[in-house]
Image 1: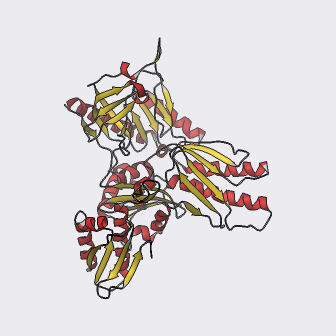
Image 2: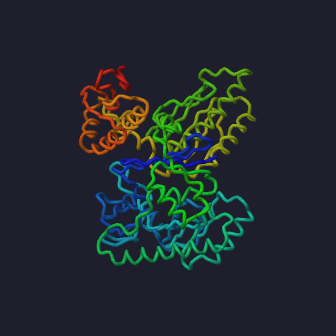
Length: 510
């Protein structure tokens, strides 16, 4: 069973994908740093850097985006795509080799660009001129002549049917890719989707022409409606959300998009926070941990480096009931399941090296590899996997779909000069708020003291004071904030104001 669980709060929106009640994917968008992926901008070429074959583009935001030569649409022949693939030009050859960026675009030139990756640190958003406009069943590529059918549609007969329809409804000079949701849909629905996307493209073009300076041309949907559009298909048995306003927006959106799915949407009304009720909060806490325990007693260790991700498998306390080879095989098979889940959950990307426990028998190595490959089929990212080496290692590469969730939940540690990670201020603040909510449901005290790091205390008193005020009003409680200068940033205590007895303590020294 697959289900989506959505938690909406004033500072962030969290969307969890559960498979058989286990957390497999987590999407977080915070109000302080909303994603702009999918947005279309009118950009102006600010500068061209021939040495890296890239250009910096002014898109009207506080930082220029950057555009690689490989992300610039030029004249090239038809291409075939799967859903989710990013098109690349077949660069036109010249007498001196491939086209150079300085021969394709020039400074102060206006370009229509789309964001494919958010700004990370000091690096601006990555841009492309290959514009994509996603619909329910179809993705429109208005600037290239591309065709494709989602690789998740496995039926040969259905793929042939869709390709026949595709050639009948594809706009001349444009490209379309049928999404997974297009499976078994009648031609009329697919054609209506294409016609709608063409109207959107016409509006985008008109706004682009009328704009006199760089800026936003078209904003993509908010993260909740984007998930509904892109992921809420017949494979998802239920979508549960804890916000009535967003619930109504989803229902209204589905009235247009897919009315049959409305009955699968549920509004969560209980007082207990939804992620706590569904045991998701506990799994999120584990994301920042280096070691992940296996049910058998074994464990895996995940280390992120600049160049790659290293994952090590250990038997731990698991001694098995049979021979050593069988014990190792069972540990490796269990570890493969957890690794496939953690790779998706943490959004690990780039080069990933997995050091399974070495096995003597070739048949066991093949069994492990086939099991692991089968587990990776549920991953939306593009993945390549090597054979198991004689040392028991697998090398794989994984496409980056979004910002690594560990980087979202944490920040470089000021105590170890960036060698490790701690929870970010926002994460700690939200942890305190959630803990207070849970405590208020069972504790009859009326007045509480929260002791925390000065930076967190300041945010609770000033920037996020309305959050605290709403919490006090909702539960008829009073909260006093106290700064403790020698607290670690993640430390906090909750005390009874009447007795000053500690009710909850998360202090590293305790």
